[in-house]
Length: 196
Image (cartoon, rainbow, N blue to C red; front, side, top):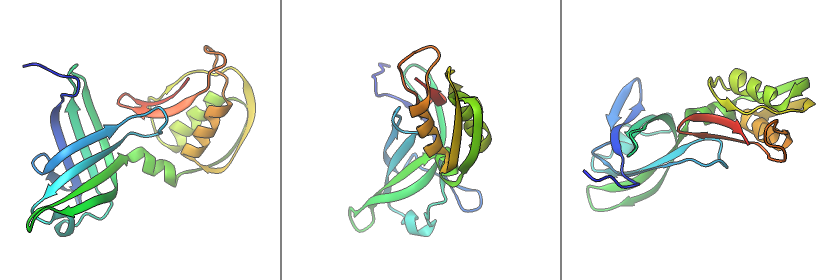
């Protein structure tokens, strides 16, 4: 079977809601998009739904739902993420029984990052040591890729959200291996990265 650059094999797309209830979206979704960017701290996704059972009201979908998404790319890489619902848009009634809408999701770490504030002083630390502390201890992310920096700083973070602090650190770091480059903090299919 020929494979094309945009082909994928959808393994699972499950909406988790209520008290552990699940809804398989494979048969009611019309389109799914995932977005990765080095200029965005988290992966996001949107799912277009063709709803003939008024699920948006009957479940109801209220914003605490999570989405389990798993698919395989043409190079046989397995891609698995858990997302949190952030908004619903583009509601339109197609006919008497079908309504279309778009569910917007972000990875769950973004919700954690927005709820977590960092208020701490670091005296004589590398920028990447501070980033490691925030990523591991404030966000609870294990296994992030962090490239080493080479200059010691005195850094005070005054009750900023974790992402604000990490983005600010990106502008301050001097990479040990790539002089003159700046850092970026982002998430892709392989996890979180604080790299040049």
